Length: 433
Ligand SMILES: Cc1ncc(COP(=O)(O)O)c(C=O)c1O
Image 1: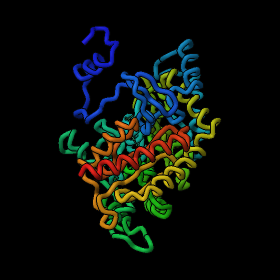
Image 2: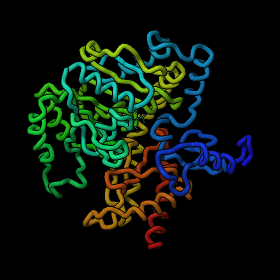
Image 3: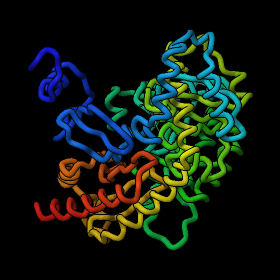
Image 4: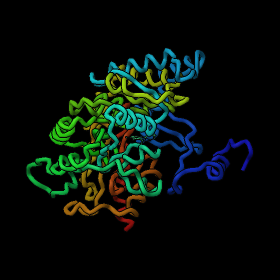
């Protein structure tokens, strides 16, 4: 290993030695990215990947968009960071933009540094406003890995990582996993999965809020309109707040500015993160109605909340997404992806779910029984795609969904490249037995 860490092997060895990660490295990971542009990342060996993860669902306008770089560079010469007691023009401009593009119920923005933290503040605000303690979350929901956010994250694997017991105040209500409906395939959905929720909430009169990803990123689950209509009516009747977690779905990802816009939902609190910093990082927000904001107290703010460089870059990201019509492109490319994936007619493709470019392809070993494709095959699929230069992650309640969330600027030609790699990959892995 060379001390100056300039060559690829030295960097990889140093990563292994010095960087702590909460998982063991799967084959081919980590990819140490030396350069990134648009939908492509290049690793320290010079290998190019089509990034179907948008840098972990962050770079909605593409990696290193010149307009974002320019805004960040300009801000670097002005002011970087001030106390949360004060403000910067960049953070104020971003706050106004969020109010302008967000639902009309929301009027005030609280800046923090990451999605988990934004959700912590949302939970806190809901408890302070309602003076109630309990929070309902959706099965399969993901809201972050800090302790408070983890308590409303459904995954047992993640919850177990914090040690038991988790807070008894928080409880799960059903999500809408229609492909695997608990009531089996049936002609007309009557949203039977929510039948027990009224009783569940009535038994928990201290429920302050329901926190939900309106479209669940894990597995790409978009409930039907009537599902949200029913849950929204149930919670409104009981004065329960809705916290919409738009950390992953926000800022154009789903083919609308926010996932709530697909359903006409008007939450009392909304959270955002990921792309909000334009890729610079360390910026998230909790957006609230005037009433909720008035009841919100705590005395201080996170030290780096509202960092000026991240705010300037985030504002440029939103402006770019709008100016380049990337939200329309997300909607269009989501449809293109869906058609192209189904056109493969691959026996392992059980379901294709895209809402804009929040996409998932669910792999099964048997399309009739919908038996989940095994872990071993899933790993091989991921590794083979990886070798072919396709950077993807695996997701879903059963770990059998290819998660496809590229920058919103992806082109039909790039999707064709992925689909061609997917066709070869599925054939190769099937043959390998
Ligand atoms: C829906 C959702 N909420 C919250 C978070 C947590 O955000 P962060 O990792 O920035 O803390 C994530 C991150 O993946 C997310 O997808």
